[in-house]
Amino acid sequence: MIELNLAPLITILSWEYPPRVVGQMAYEVDMIARRISQKLPVSVVTFHDAPYNMESISEKLEIHRVPNPVTPHATIVTWSVSLCSEIERIVADMYYDRAKKDMLIDVHGWHFIPAAVTLKKAIGIRFVFTPHSLEDHRTGNPSSALSSCIKGIEWLGLYESEFVSVNSKWMLEEINKIHSVPSTKIKVFSDTDQLILSYQGLLASQ
Amino acid sequence: MEDMISVIMLTWEYPPRIIGGLSAHVYELSKSLAEMGVKVHVVTCDFPGAPEYEEDDGVKVHRIDSYRYPTPDFATWVAMMNVNLQHAAAEIIASGKKFTLLHAHDWLVADAGIGLKHTFRLPLVATIHSTEYGRRNGIHDDYQRMISSHESWLTREAWRVICCSNYMAWEVSNILGVSHDKIDVVPNGINSESYEKTPASQEIRSRFALTDEKLILYVGRLVHEKGVHLLLEAMPLLVRDFNAKLVVVGEGYLKEELINRARQLGIENKVYITGFLESSILKQLFRVADICVIPSLYEPFGIVALEAMVSRCPIVTTGVGGLGEILQHEKTALFVHSTPESIRWGISQLLQNRALADALAESAYKRAKSLYRWDNIARSTLSVYERVIKEYDAGSWKPK
Image (tube, rainbow over all chains, first blue to last red; front, top):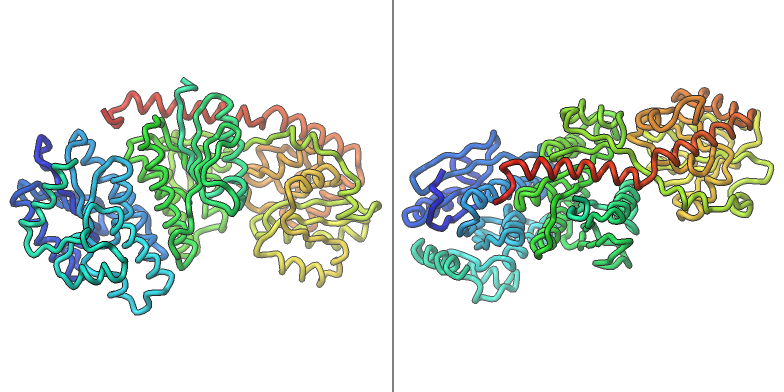
């Protein structure tokens, strides 16, 4: 486990991380986590379908793989919400183990937004939301009840987060257009150093 | 210690939102705990016309917007209700008030309760009112498996598990794999005063049965596990010997089937299926009924038995599950088998022998008054809380 004396901890929440690869997001999160961990300690909390384990990739990068405590599930939303309680457990344990020292969450994709919001409301860990795509882009029927529900969770993340992190101006405009999020809240990062500076700015203001 | 305990009660139903017996249970328990000095905050679902926040008999009630997100089905609605419930409860707990524990009622609030437990590191007590296995007579599909999995998870995460009867403790232990050491049996209670104050109104009786008809009462959901279909099948034999009317109070998926079956049996004029009735009317019905029949095939507790007992209404019952603990054969009720013939026999015995019926009803009344008072139930629940807090305080999991 990362030494806890110490530097602020960036906790990345992502429903996919290698070797669990669903889409492109797994690779992107892996790349970002490795780059950030050159400068700040990073814990990635992700899902896998096996008992919990923690793997230390380097001195400043560890991966927590968490199973869903409930199985099977009715929909992707029920899957996500039950898993969120387990994600909350893992992150809260880090928080208490670190004697409540500085932590910041970057939640990638919509699946773990409910957990990020609870952690913020309960113990004050602020979070950044990094959407890699939007439900409107993925679904063939954005007005269906399930897609509307997922869009509601996206909206929750967009409004409860400190800022929204994207990697293109196009994505900024899409979020602005679909969810009416003010453009000033959305930051386009072309490299990880800029992202780290923004993390540090947030941590310094806590 | 009592005045220091402050509990967050998580429940998906609380009056005026009434789905089943859970609503009344949480209401009476919360009220009685508050009277004993426990600070109780109930976090629950919204209901049309009910305020977002109110103080109700000393209980602080917070109602969340449970329909904030569109959802495609009940399971997804439950999940999103938990998200909203958890966020609302997190704000309440984080607002500076000191809370000592969380109390979750049934799987429907498991996601919220477990997440709150870990984020605040507060001990969690869970009451399991029934199990999916018991309700469905087994686990037959993935939907039921998901609910049962939630129940297992909640009982794993709970510091202590409360069940309403020894039967339920056995079921929770055997089906969900919870150690007996972790389970406390605390029965449901009854507010007998409100039943005793209710007059035996012949005017009310005349709305449901003719003056010369014996009134046989069934109260409960119209679902298979309650055995109401067996009672209906007993009626053709019964009405050959007695001038009797069966009054069925409740709603459920069997309603249409029961109405059609009564017609097929040629007893539609001897069966009155009322649907839901207001609480005040129902209490009067218990007071004027000649017999209350509880023909359940599965019953974790059987709160309808307590209602009949405090109304001095003689009971015929299958005595399954918790009913066999509340009632005793030939002392406080007449027990029968789960067949129409046996049910008919039990009803006939009491209709023929009014002295026996009155004696059973009087014994049942005294038993309910002595054992199932809400202040006793709250005191037992408080003992569970005190034990949990003591262990929590002595352990290393509590945040420094």
